[in-house]
Length: 464
Image (cartoon, rainbow, N blue to C red):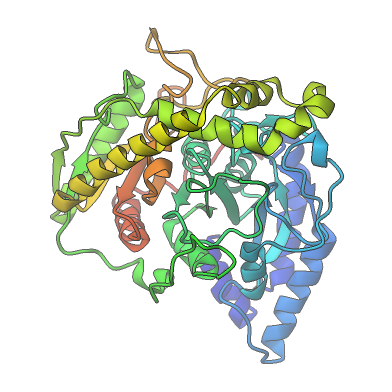
Protein backbone atom coordinates (compact mmCIF):
# COMPACT_ATOMS: atom_id res chain seq x y z
CA UNK A 1 0.00 0.00 0.00
CA UNK A 2 1.44 3.41 -0.93
CA UNK A 3 2.04 5.83 1.91
CA UNK A 4 -0.43 8.39 0.56
CA UNK A 5 -3.17 5.75 0.83
CA UNK A 6 -2.02 4.81 4.34
CA UNK A 7 -2.47 8.46 5.34
CA UNK A 8 -6.12 8.37 4.28
CA UNK A 9 -6.86 4.97 5.83
CA UNK A 10 -5.29 6.05 9.13
CA UNK A 11 -7.13 9.37 9.08
CA UNK A 12 -10.47 7.55 8.93
CA UNK A 13 -9.16 4.76 11.19
CA UNK A 14 -10.24 2.23 8.56
CA UNK A 15 -6.76 0.96 9.31
CA UNK A 16 -4.88 2.08 12.38
CA UNK A 17 -1.27 3.11 12.38
CA UNK A 18 -0.61 0.41 14.95
CA UNK A 19 -2.11 -2.28 12.71
CA UNK A 20 0.07 -1.14 9.81
CA UNK A 21 3.12 -0.93 12.03
CA UNK A 22 2.62 -4.42 13.48
CA UNK A 23 2.24 -5.85 9.97
CA UNK A 24 5.49 -4.21 8.91
CA UNK A 25 7.32 -5.36 12.02
CA UNK A 26 6.27 -8.94 11.29
CA UNK A 27 7.53 -8.61 7.72
CA UNK A 28 10.80 -7.00 8.80
CA UNK A 29 11.44 -9.88 11.19
CA UNK A 30 10.89 -12.30 8.31
CA UNK A 31 12.59 -10.47 5.42
CA UNK A 32 15.40 -8.43 6.95
CA UNK A 33 17.53 -11.49 7.88
CA UNK A 34 17.56 -12.30 4.15
CA UNK A 35 18.60 -8.89 2.77
CA UNK A 36 20.10 -7.06 5.78
CA UNK A 37 18.51 -3.70 4.95
CA UNK A 38 17.94 -2.54 8.54
CA UNK A 39 20.98 -2.34 10.78
CA UNK A 40 19.03 -1.10 13.81
CA UNK A 41 15.31 -1.61 14.43
CA UNK A 42 13.20 0.46 16.82
CA UNK A 43 10.04 -1.59 17.18
CA UNK A 44 9.09 -0.43 20.68
CA UNK A 45 9.47 3.18 19.62
CA UNK A 46 7.47 2.49 16.45
CA UNK A 47 4.60 0.98 18.42
CA UNK A 48 4.60 3.95 20.78
CA UNK A 49 4.63 6.48 17.92
CA UNK A 50 1.88 4.57 16.09
CA UNK A 51 -0.29 4.48 19.21
CA UNK A 52 0.11 8.24 19.67
CA UNK A 53 -0.73 8.83 16.00
CA UNK A 54 -3.98 6.89 16.38
CA UNK A 55 -4.81 8.66 19.65
CA UNK A 56 -4.35 12.06 18.01
CA UNK A 57 -7.02 11.18 15.46
CA UNK A 58 -9.44 9.73 17.98
CA UNK A 59 -9.11 12.72 20.30
CA UNK A 60 -9.31 15.29 17.52
CA UNK A 61 -5.80 16.57 18.20
CA UNK A 62 -4.01 18.34 15.33
CA UNK A 63 -1.72 15.92 13.50
CA UNK A 64 0.86 16.05 10.74
CA UNK A 65 0.71 15.27 7.02
CA UNK A 66 2.20 11.77 7.33
CA UNK A 67 0.52 10.98 10.63
CA UNK A 68 0.99 7.32 11.52
CA UNK A 69 2.96 6.31 8.42
CA UNK A 70 6.05 4.17 9.14
CA UNK A 71 9.41 5.01 7.61
CA UNK A 72 13.13 4.29 7.92
CA UNK A 73 16.15 6.57 8.24
CA UNK A 74 19.60 6.05 6.79
CA UNK A 75 22.19 5.29 9.46
CA UNK A 76 24.06 8.55 8.95
CA UNK A 77 21.18 10.71 10.20
CA UNK A 78 21.41 11.77 13.85
CA UNK A 79 18.44 10.40 15.81
CA UNK A 80 17.87 11.09 19.48
CA UNK A 81 18.06 7.94 21.55
CA UNK A 82 18.68 5.67 18.54
CA UNK A 83 22.09 4.21 17.73
CA UNK A 84 23.67 6.07 14.82
CA UNK A 85 26.87 4.39 13.59
CA UNK A 86 27.58 5.93 10.16
CA UNK A 87 28.49 2.33 9.27
CA UNK A 88 31.77 2.76 11.15
CA UNK A 89 33.43 0.93 14.01
CA UNK A 90 34.40 4.36 15.32
CA UNK A 91 30.74 5.06 16.17
CA UNK A 92 29.58 1.48 16.70
CA UNK A 93 27.90 2.26 20.02
CA UNK A 94 27.11 5.95 19.54
CA UNK A 95 23.63 7.10 20.58
CA UNK A 96 22.96 10.81 19.88
CA UNK A 97 21.20 13.01 22.42
CA UNK A 98 19.56 15.07 19.68
CA UNK A 99 17.70 14.80 16.38
CA UNK A 100 18.78 16.35 13.12
CA UNK A 101 16.44 18.98 11.71
CA UNK A 102 15.06 16.56 9.15
CA UNK A 103 14.14 14.08 11.89
CA UNK A 104 12.47 16.83 13.92
CA UNK A 105 10.37 17.74 10.90
CA UNK A 106 9.43 14.13 10.21
CA UNK A 107 8.43 13.62 13.85
CA UNK A 108 6.33 16.79 13.71
CA UNK A 109 4.67 15.44 10.55
CA UNK A 110 3.62 12.36 12.51
CA UNK A 111 5.92 9.65 11.17
CA UNK A 112 6.54 6.27 12.82
CA UNK A 113 10.24 5.35 12.91
CA UNK A 114 10.87 1.66 12.17
CA UNK A 115 14.67 1.87 12.39
CA UNK A 116 17.93 2.78 10.67
CA UNK A 117 19.06 1.39 7.32
CA UNK A 118 22.50 0.14 6.41
CA UNK A 119 25.14 2.24 4.67
CA UNK A 120 28.81 1.90 3.71
CA UNK A 121 31.19 3.48 6.19
CA UNK A 122 30.51 7.22 6.24
CA UNK A 123 28.50 6.73 3.00
CA UNK A 124 31.73 6.65 1.02
CA UNK A 125 30.79 4.46 -1.96
CA UNK A 126 28.11 3.19 -4.32
CA UNK A 127 27.64 -0.24 -2.72
CA UNK A 128 26.47 -1.07 0.79
CA UNK A 129 28.68 -3.05 3.15
CA UNK A 130 30.59 -2.24 6.32
CA UNK A 131 32.57 -3.88 9.10
CA UNK A 132 29.77 -3.71 11.68
CA UNK A 133 26.71 -5.00 9.86
CA UNK A 134 28.12 -6.65 6.75
CA UNK A 135 26.59 -6.61 3.28
CA UNK A 136 23.11 -5.51 2.30
CA UNK A 137 21.72 -7.64 -0.54
CA UNK A 138 19.66 -6.66 -3.54
CA UNK A 139 16.09 -8.01 -3.16
CA UNK A 140 15.96 -8.88 -6.88
CA UNK A 141 19.09 -11.04 -6.82
CA UNK A 142 20.72 -11.79 -3.50
CA UNK A 143 24.21 -12.09 -4.99
CA UNK A 144 24.05 -8.48 -6.24
CA UNK A 145 24.54 -5.15 -4.52
CA UNK A 146 21.59 -2.87 -3.82
CA UNK A 147 23.87 0.04 -4.69
CA UNK A 148 24.83 2.76 -2.26
CA UNK A 149 25.31 4.57 -0.24
CA UNK A 150 21.58 4.52 0.62
CA UNK A 151 21.50 0.82 -0.24
CA UNK A 152 19.76 -0.29 2.93
CA UNK A 153 17.04 2.32 2.37
CA UNK A 154 16.34 1.27 -1.22
CA UNK A 155 16.44 -2.45 -0.40
CA UNK A 156 13.96 -1.90 2.44
CA UNK A 157 11.51 -0.03 0.21
CA UNK A 158 11.84 -2.51 -2.65
CA UNK A 159 11.21 -5.50 -0.38
CA UNK A 160 8.14 -4.01 1.29
CA UNK A 161 9.61 -3.47 4.75
CA UNK A 162 9.68 0.33 4.66
CA UNK A 163 6.87 2.32 2.98
CA UNK A 164 9.06 5.42 2.97
CA UNK A 165 12.82 5.82 3.39
CA UNK A 166 15.08 8.82 3.80
CA UNK A 167 18.45 8.64 2.10
CA UNK A 168 21.28 11.04 1.34
CA UNK A 169 23.00 11.76 -1.96
CA UNK A 170 26.45 13.31 -2.39
CA UNK A 171 27.39 11.53 -5.62
CA UNK A 172 24.40 9.39 -6.58
CA UNK A 173 23.65 7.75 -3.25
CA UNK A 174 19.86 8.01 -3.60
CA UNK A 175 19.60 7.49 -7.36
CA UNK A 176 22.04 4.57 -7.69
CA UNK A 177 20.33 2.27 -5.15
CA UNK A 178 16.89 3.35 -6.34
CA UNK A 179 17.94 2.31 -9.84
CA UNK A 180 19.46 -1.00 -8.71
CA UNK A 181 16.48 -1.88 -6.49
CA UNK A 182 13.70 -0.81 -8.84
CA UNK A 183 12.20 2.03 -6.78
CA UNK A 184 11.83 5.80 -7.05
CA UNK A 185 14.47 8.11 -5.58
CA UNK A 186 14.72 11.91 -5.67
CA UNK A 187 17.90 13.91 -5.13
CA UNK A 188 16.64 17.34 -4.26
CA UNK A 189 18.24 20.65 -5.23
CA UNK A 190 21.17 21.43 -3.00
CA UNK A 191 19.65 23.18 0.02
CA UNK A 192 16.04 22.08 -0.48
CA UNK A 193 16.14 20.01 2.73
CA UNK A 194 18.22 21.64 5.50
CA UNK A 195 21.07 19.61 6.95
CA UNK A 196 21.95 20.39 10.55
CA UNK A 197 23.90 19.34 12.44
CA UNK A 198 26.21 17.44 10.12
CA UNK A 199 29.11 15.12 10.78
CA UNK A 200 32.26 17.07 9.97
CA UNK A 201 32.25 18.84 6.63
CA UNK A 202 29.90 16.05 5.36
CA UNK A 203 29.61 16.76 1.67
CA UNK A 204 29.41 20.51 1.93
CA UNK A 205 28.06 21.98 -1.33
CA UNK A 206 27.17 18.56 -2.81
CA UNK A 207 25.15 16.54 -0.26
CA UNK A 208 21.36 16.41 0.03
CA UNK A 209 18.63 14.41 1.77
CA UNK A 210 15.76 12.99 -0.22
CA UNK A 211 13.04 10.32 -0.38
CA UNK A 212 13.13 6.74 -1.65
CA UNK A 213 9.65 5.36 -2.28
CA UNK A 214 7.49 2.94 -4.27
CA UNK A 215 5.48 5.72 -5.91
CA UNK A 216 6.09 9.28 -7.07
CA UNK A 217 3.16 10.56 -5.00
CA UNK A 218 4.82 9.20 -1.87
CA UNK A 219 8.01 11.09 -2.68
CA UNK A 220 6.01 14.30 -3.09
CA UNK A 221 4.28 13.67 0.24
CA UNK A 222 7.46 13.12 2.24
CA UNK A 223 9.21 16.06 0.56
CA UNK A 224 6.40 18.30 1.80
CA UNK A 225 7.33 17.24 5.33
CA UNK A 226 11.09 17.86 4.92
CA UNK A 227 11.48 20.96 2.76
CA UNK A 228 12.03 24.56 3.79
CA UNK A 229 14.84 26.79 4.98
CA UNK A 230 16.34 26.93 8.45
CA UNK A 231 18.79 29.52 9.76
CA UNK A 232 21.04 26.76 11.12
CA UNK A 233 21.88 25.75 7.55
CA UNK A 234 23.09 28.76 5.62
CA UNK A 235 22.73 26.86 2.32
CA UNK A 236 19.08 25.94 2.89
CA UNK A 237 16.59 27.23 0.34
CA UNK A 238 13.53 29.34 1.11
CA UNK A 239 10.25 27.46 0.84
CA UNK A 240 8.57 28.08 -2.52
CA UNK A 241 5.15 27.58 -0.89
CA UNK A 242 4.50 24.65 -3.20
CA UNK A 243 2.47 21.72 -1.94
CA UNK A 244 4.13 18.95 -3.91
CA UNK A 245 1.61 16.25 -3.01
CA UNK A 246 -1.28 18.42 -4.23
CA UNK A 247 0.43 19.45 -7.47
CA UNK A 248 2.13 16.19 -8.47
CA UNK A 249 -0.88 14.96 -10.49
CA UNK A 250 -0.86 18.01 -12.75
CA UNK A 251 0.75 17.55 -16.17
CA UNK A 252 2.60 20.44 -17.81
CA UNK A 253 0.95 21.33 -21.13
CA UNK A 254 4.15 21.76 -23.06
CA UNK A 255 7.57 20.38 -22.33
CA UNK A 256 10.73 20.10 -24.37
CA UNK A 257 12.70 17.07 -23.28
CA UNK A 258 16.26 16.36 -24.29
CA UNK A 259 17.94 13.03 -23.76
CA UNK A 260 21.55 11.92 -23.73
CA UNK A 261 23.11 8.49 -23.35
CA UNK A 262 26.61 9.82 -22.70
CA UNK A 263 26.46 13.50 -21.59
CA UNK A 264 29.31 13.94 -24.04
CA UNK A 265 31.85 11.91 -22.08
CA UNK A 266 30.51 8.54 -20.83
CA UNK A 267 32.50 5.80 -22.57
CA UNK A 268 30.04 2.91 -22.61
CA UNK A 269 26.73 1.72 -21.17
CA UNK A 270 25.16 -1.71 -20.92
CA UNK A 271 23.07 -2.61 -23.98
CA UNK A 272 19.97 -3.44 -21.89
CA UNK A 273 20.23 -0.06 -20.18
CA UNK A 274 20.53 1.76 -23.50
CA UNK A 275 17.57 -0.07 -25.03
CA UNK A 276 15.21 0.47 -22.09
CA UNK A 277 16.04 4.16 -21.61
CA UNK A 278 15.62 4.90 -25.32
CA UNK A 279 12.29 3.09 -25.41
CA UNK A 280 11.13 4.90 -22.29
CA UNK A 281 12.00 8.45 -23.27
CA UNK A 282 10.00 8.12 -26.49
CA UNK A 283 6.87 7.41 -24.41
CA UNK A 284 6.76 11.06 -23.38
CA UNK A 285 5.65 11.90 -26.93
CA UNK A 286 2.29 10.28 -26.06
CA UNK A 287 1.72 13.28 -23.78
CA UNK A 288 2.29 15.74 -26.59
CA UNK A 289 5.72 16.71 -25.30
CA UNK A 290 8.68 17.30 -27.60
CA UNK A 291 11.47 14.72 -27.31
CA UNK A 292 14.82 15.03 -29.03
CA UNK A 293 18.42 13.97 -28.63
CA UNK A 294 20.41 16.63 -26.80
CA UNK A 295 23.89 17.53 -27.99
CA UNK A 296 25.86 18.02 -24.79
CA UNK A 297 29.60 18.40 -25.02
CA UNK A 298 31.97 18.48 -22.08
CA UNK A 299 35.18 17.05 -20.80
CA UNK A 300 34.86 14.19 -18.36
CA UNK A 301 34.00 15.73 -14.96
CA UNK A 302 35.46 12.90 -12.87
CA UNK A 303 38.53 14.73 -11.57
CA UNK A 304 36.77 17.65 -9.81
CA UNK A 305 34.43 15.17 -8.15
CA UNK A 306 37.28 12.91 -7.04
CA UNK A 307 39.20 15.90 -5.66
CA UNK A 308 36.21 17.31 -3.83
CA UNK A 309 35.10 13.91 -2.53
CA UNK A 310 38.47 12.64 -1.32
CA UNK A 311 39.59 15.95 0.18
CA UNK A 312 36.36 16.06 2.14
CA UNK A 313 37.07 12.62 3.61
CA UNK A 314 40.68 13.53 4.24
CA UNK A 315 39.64 16.64 6.15
CA UNK A 316 37.09 14.78 8.26
CA UNK A 317 39.01 11.60 9.05
CA UNK A 318 42.76 12.17 8.81
CA UNK A 319 42.87 12.42 12.62
CA UNK A 320 41.23 8.99 12.92
CA UNK A 321 43.73 7.07 10.80
CA UNK A 322 46.41 6.36 13.39
CA UNK A 323 43.98 4.79 15.85
CA UNK A 324 41.36 3.31 13.55
CA UNK A 325 43.04 2.47 10.23
CA UNK A 326 42.84 -1.31 10.77
CA UNK A 327 39.14 -1.06 11.68
CA UNK A 328 38.13 1.09 8.70
CA UNK A 329 37.13 -0.04 5.22
CA UNK A 330 40.34 -0.27 3.13
CA UNK A 331 38.72 1.62 0.24
CA UNK A 332 37.81 4.46 2.59
CA UNK A 333 41.37 4.57 3.94
CA UNK A 334 42.68 4.86 0.38
CA UNK A 335 40.24 7.70 -0.31
CA UNK A 336 41.40 9.57 2.79
CA UNK A 337 45.04 9.11 1.89
CA UNK A 338 44.36 10.13 -1.71
CA UNK A 339 42.66 13.31 -0.55
CA UNK A 340 45.69 14.26 1.52
CA UNK A 341 47.77 14.52 -1.67
CA UNK A 342 45.76 17.36 -3.20
CA UNK A 343 46.78 20.98 -2.69
CA UNK A 344 44.74 24.11 -2.15
CA UNK A 345 45.41 24.98 -5.78
CA UNK A 346 43.94 21.62 -6.85
CA UNK A 347 40.79 22.41 -4.90
CA UNK A 348 40.48 25.81 -6.56
CA UNK A 349 40.91 24.17 -9.97
CA UNK A 350 38.15 21.73 -9.08
CA UNK A 351 35.84 24.59 -8.07
CA UNK A 352 36.65 26.38 -11.33
CA UNK A 353 35.76 23.23 -13.27
CA UNK A 354 32.49 22.92 -11.33
CA UNK A 355 31.68 26.50 -12.36
CA UNK A 356 32.23 25.52 -16.00
CA UNK A 357 29.99 22.46 -15.61
CA UNK A 358 27.22 24.58 -14.17
CA UNK A 359 27.49 26.95 -17.14
CA UNK A 360 26.90 24.03 -19.52
CA UNK A 361 23.61 23.15 -17.83
CA UNK A 362 22.65 26.78 -17.39
CA UNK A 363 22.79 27.05 -21.17
CA UNK A 364 21.07 23.68 -21.64
CA UNK A 365 18.04 24.63 -19.57
CA UNK A 366 17.55 27.79 -21.61
CA UNK A 367 16.40 25.49 -24.42
CA UNK A 368 15.00 22.44 -22.61
CA UNK A 369 12.70 21.82 -19.67
CA UNK A 370 13.97 18.34 -18.77
CA UNK A 371 17.07 16.22 -19.34
CA UNK A 372 16.78 12.43 -19.51
CA UNK A 373 19.74 10.07 -19.06
CA UNK A 374 20.23 6.54 -17.77
CA UNK A 375 20.47 6.49 -13.98
CA UNK A 376 23.53 4.25 -14.16
CA UNK A 377 25.51 2.68 -16.99
CA UNK A 378 24.96 -0.85 -15.64
CA UNK A 379 22.52 -2.93 -13.65
CA UNK A 380 23.35 -4.14 -10.15
CA UNK A 381 26.79 -5.76 -9.96
CA UNK A 382 28.11 -8.40 -7.59
CA UNK A 383 28.16 -7.93 -3.84
CA UNK A 384 31.13 -6.54 -1.97
CA UNK A 385 32.95 -4.53 -4.65
CA UNK A 386 33.13 -0.79 -5.27
CA UNK A 387 32.06 -1.14 -8.90
CA UNK A 388 32.75 -2.97 -12.17
CA UNK A 389 36.03 -2.39 -13.98
CA UNK A 390 34.57 -3.29 -17.38
CA UNK A 391 31.31 -2.65 -19.22
CA UNK A 392 30.59 -4.52 -22.46
CA UNK A 393 34.21 -5.70 -22.41
CA UNK A 394 35.64 -2.17 -22.22
CA UNK A 395 37.72 -0.96 -19.27
CA UNK A 396 36.16 1.87 -17.29
CA UNK A 397 37.36 4.16 -14.51
CA UNK A 398 36.04 3.90 -10.92
CA UNK A 399 33.19 6.27 -11.84
CA UNK A 400 32.65 4.77 -15.30
CA UNK A 401 29.61 2.79 -14.17
CA UNK A 402 27.92 5.87 -12.69
CA UNK A 403 28.80 8.76 -15.03
CA UNK A 404 25.31 10.29 -14.94
CA UNK A 405 24.86 10.92 -11.22
CA UNK A 406 27.74 12.74 -9.55
CA UNK A 407 27.77 15.59 -12.04
CA UNK A 408 24.43 16.86 -10.70
CA UNK A 409 25.81 16.86 -7.17
CA UNK A 410 28.51 19.17 -8.44
CA UNK A 411 26.00 21.49 -10.15
CA UNK A 412 23.26 21.22 -7.50
CA UNK A 413 20.44 20.31 -9.90
CA UNK A 414 17.56 18.10 -8.72
CA UNK A 415 17.43 14.64 -10.29
CA UNK A 416 15.38 11.50 -9.84
CA UNK A 417 15.72 7.84 -10.78
CA UNK A 418 12.56 6.03 -11.86
CA UNK A 419 12.29 2.38 -12.94
CA UNK A 420 11.97 2.11 -16.73
CA UNK A 421 12.47 -1.59 -17.41
CA UNK A 422 14.28 -4.79 -16.51
CA UNK A 423 17.36 -6.43 -17.95
CA UNK A 424 17.37 -9.84 -19.62
CA UNK A 425 18.46 -11.37 -16.31
CA UNK A 426 15.66 -9.71 -14.36
CA UNK A 427 17.40 -6.71 -12.79
CA UNK A 428 15.83 -3.23 -12.61
CA UNK A 429 16.93 -0.43 -14.92
CA UNK A 430 16.53 3.22 -13.98
CA UNK A 431 15.97 6.37 -16.01
CA UNK A 432 17.22 9.68 -14.61
CA UNK A 433 15.02 12.76 -14.87
CA UNK A 434 16.84 16.08 -14.33
CA UNK A 435 15.38 19.58 -14.14
CA UNK A 436 16.70 23.08 -13.62
CA UNK A 437 17.59 24.21 -10.12
CA UNK A 438 14.67 24.51 -7.68
CA UNK A 439 12.32 22.60 -10.02
CA UNK A 440 11.54 19.53 -7.94
CA UNK A 441 7.86 19.97 -8.80
CA UNK A 442 8.58 19.62 -12.51
CA UNK A 443 10.57 16.43 -11.88
CA UNK A 444 7.79 15.00 -9.75
CA UNK A 445 5.13 15.84 -12.35
CA UNK A 446 7.16 14.35 -15.20
CA UNK A 447 7.92 11.29 -13.07
CA UNK A 448 4.26 10.82 -12.19
CA UNK A 449 3.25 11.17 -15.84
CA UNK A 450 5.79 8.50 -16.80
CA UNK A 451 4.59 6.28 -13.98
CA UNK A 452 1.07 6.44 -15.43
CA UNK A 453 2.09 5.53 -19.00
CA UNK A 454 4.70 2.95 -17.92
CA UNK A 455 3.59 1.49 -14.56
CA UNK A 456 6.23 -0.36 -12.57
CA UNK A 457 4.98 -0.68 -8.98
CA UNK A 458 3.26 -4.04 -9.42
CA UNK A 459 6.51 -5.81 -10.24
CA UNK A 460 8.09 -6.93 -6.98
CA UNK A 461 11.23 -8.85 -6.07
CA UNK A 462 10.96 -12.61 -5.45
CA UNK A 463 10.85 -12.47 -1.65
CA UNK A 464 8.20 -14.28 0.42
